[in-house]
Amino acid sequence: MEKAIQVPVASAQAEAIQPRRTDKQIWGIYIALCIISIIELYSASSHEVNAANVLGPVIRHVGFLLVGLVVMIYLQNVHYRKFLRWSYVFAGISVVSMVYTLKFGESINGANRSFSIGGLFALQPAEMLKLSVALVLAAILSKSQLKDEEDVSAKGLRKAAVWVLVAGGLLFFQGLTNTILVMCISGSMMVIGGVSLKKLLMVMGVFGVAAIIGLGAKVVMAKSHSSDRQVQTEMVVPGTDVVLGGYDAVGDKGMGRMMTWANRLTRHSSDKAKWDEPVSNINAQEQYSYMAQAHGGVFGVMPGNSRETARLPLASSDYIYAIVIEELGLLGGMLVLVLYLWLLARAARIANRCQTAYPALLVIGMAVFIAFQAIFHMCIVTGVFPVSGQPLPLISRGGTSVIITSAALGIMLSVSRFAARKGKRTEIKDELSALPDEVNAVNPT
Image (cartoon, rainbow, N blue to C red; front, side):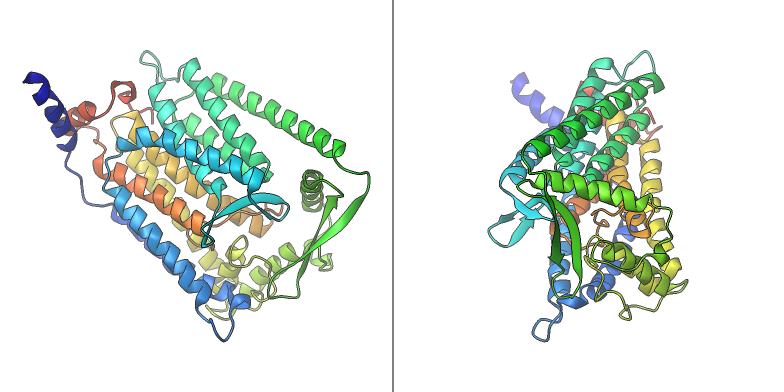
């Protein structure tokens, strides 16, 4: 009889934590980003619009936003302790999906990046894998907190490093940007998670060696499977007269990606002023992006008046920030940046008020995942980073990115509602009874 009662009591204690009201600031940021997204994506998709389907691109994007909204509302009502178990399941699905994509996926710009689900939806596992990195690291680092000192155990740090290397290695085959992004997310979470400077430097050293080995192996493999001759390849952007150029080695796409990376880094490090460079099929993407931003000025030309959207390649996805600046000006571009930084600051505030490590690392991990991705996009578009592809969370077109970002926001809302706050003895007691003992470490933030 006692055993029959014990399970319901434990469950009752876990459910006894009364959720707070939803975080208005996170919701406000989300709504603002969605409004900007719908307005700017309509302008950025102008080259896809035809008389028979004027609102097609926007309707599709709004559909993904609605799916993301449902996911977000559902997750905010789920106690964050449940994410501890499902993080590993989601990570496993992400890895399997990524491996499948690399082998059988659809090739986009020289790399296999997605696969179709029922012919209706193109899934990009890279977005799932980046979220998985933050989810699993939050679990590992919270389990590995040392009780006697403010640090993470060597065993836990090894697990974290191996996981990051696996995820980064898989993303490496699609491009350098996502790999670097994962390293930035993981490094930030390790710092926030209390990893000592000595251990952190050792891990970063391991990552650096792995990157050198990976690059070397890719060059050797590419050369061994390709001819000595390289040819210039061209891609016409649908709906425009713009032709993008690149380099590919006959018989091997891998060497082509290596040449693409090398060429982009060379162009980026050139001392020649961008306005002195003639527009060509090699630099059209970045040049039209700069023209759009210059055209916008301080106050912008107002929504719907973009001049460059018709000829800027990937204006609705990888380069939508250029259209935002063109139509909303420097002030509008700064507003978008502030919204992502505000989200990061709000997550830091929530994390600082958490009593235990896991919810603190979970909420900050989700915010770092979103904020870093946004900053990478902005740096690429404005020329701070070399040309690459990275969506602007919630604003860029892309179903997987929208849904994954919405899921991350839902997890943040769950932590803000259910995590015990410092000084609340009743809440802390209920939280400790709901969480496994292995993640009951004190919040390192």
